[in-house]
Length: 249
Length: 317
Image (spheres, chains in turn orange, brown):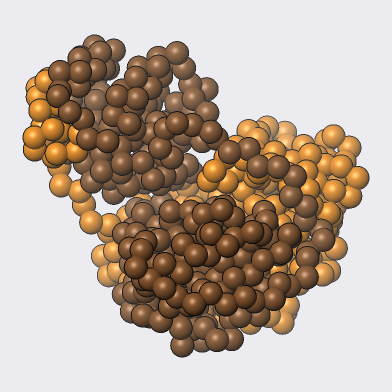
């Protein structure tokens, strides 16, 4: 079984986001970037499946500018076998990314495509579902447990009401929740080895898909600031305030 | 053209956030039709027809719709899409799973998780876990929009009398099979809809100590929340997690106990109407969003809090 894993480069989750003064977006210059956290879970799961002898190859793919390749290199350092970098500049909406991935899936013919359930920059939560629609494959979103069976996966999904278990036939798409596993760190020898693993570069324009944005970002602004409250001296005062001032208990 | 709202339900009755999504739909256009897809949904369809903002109900029933599989839902909604300018749904796990599948079939760039309707083609949505707000205009002829339910008030639930029209089902998608759903059963209100949430963080120091949180929650009729740190430490199960990677809650009262207030936690609760923080570290970031902050050792403060609550003659439920 061959697993394709899509990874995205985003602002690191520990960075305090700053909005640009002209309202055109958020500050990304000189800001630490890293792999979208649930994409790390997707890579980890694919590598674990291969280590368990249930997959033969793990291919990491990213779509984006030159530096996006760092995320593929990182995936190679934790166990992916080879990489693909589809080069594209500018804004790529999930619909465009899913069309690009569809083209790569047509060529690579993986049995499974994994990715994070959501990117922590645009918070769209769309790409996996869109790709499965375009391929007419089954989708298991928000996966917190994956059991590989013969040509089938049993997947536990995190839903609002609790947990849901579904069985999907391969080929299929899985989007990964943070609770799926604990991503490993790359060891120094493996980082060195990863430098020798191949990364195929493809120009998005050669894939023949229309990736022009359909959405216009009119402006980006700071969320309204919450007014600083007061400190109370003791519990009795707190309960009195909640009862008589805020009137919430 | 009218707006098509996808109702969320459990086959027997509507799930509450359908009412919030209906409000958002009615702000896009006053002509709102609602589709309910499931099995044996007569009663839920009737509830939907009684929402005054809904002008027409489309009911689609088949055995393969019983478990809300997106692969089954998407094609039948796509078939209806010709008659509608917008397709809308709540941005909870049901809508998040389903809507992109519809959008891709329609070749539409979806607008996810909106918190405000600015105009029929322009919406406000949080990005970077609510650390920035983006105003987005959709230039697609047909728009697929998911709605953050807690940002819209629920619509009236009675007084309407929309017609209910049966629509034919589509074929079953055979490559996805539902096995089981384990719903978290609790006498407590659901975290996402509770009026009061009491949350504990790493400061609770152990899973046993969460009993203190449970006592307060019982007294107040509140749901129990937790920070990611408390979940990661194994103090409590992850369905209680509030934050960027957990649930986003907007209760009337949020009580954060022993929670420092990491960015990712604040993203999940800072829109709450009243926030209380109890923490012994006076510099903890949680105090910057708290309406009432108490700098105290929580193991002293919680028993006192119970005592004070017990002194009250009445507590709102």
